[in-house]
Length: 161
Image (tube, rainbow, N blue to C red; front, side):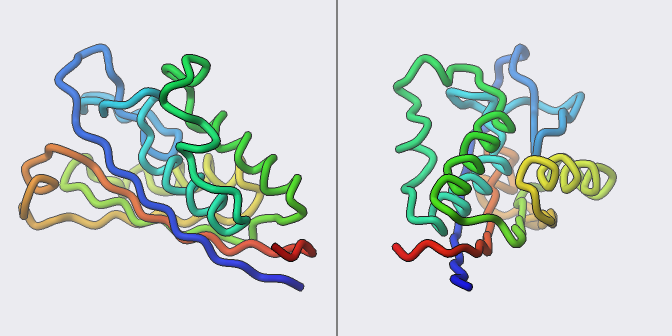
């Protein structure tokens, strides 16, 4: 068995556009400002994509789904995650598990954490855990200017890259 680990990271600024919706881990958070991005700006899904692609040696989200490509404008990040999982499977790997840490003071993730984990796990085809951490009001994240997510993915397969 060939095990590989990948790390993903994403950050998006909070938008002042009322038409943008906040989506984290495929879950819509009503009443919170959305994030700026070419797609739906789901930082959790994006970090998971990067972790999986990195583990499989398939580059990163920007290489596979460039923000210069109009096909991805406004894209649902769970659809992009599905496509990333397909690329990983095509490379003869599959996810074992993914662990995510979201850094933001708002919204509070605890009430929706299980829903996020279920949505992501369903797409990844393996357990995905989601944890929330606050900044205690420190820096740009503490001022609510952005949201960050970090993810670590473990994959297994027969491929040798």
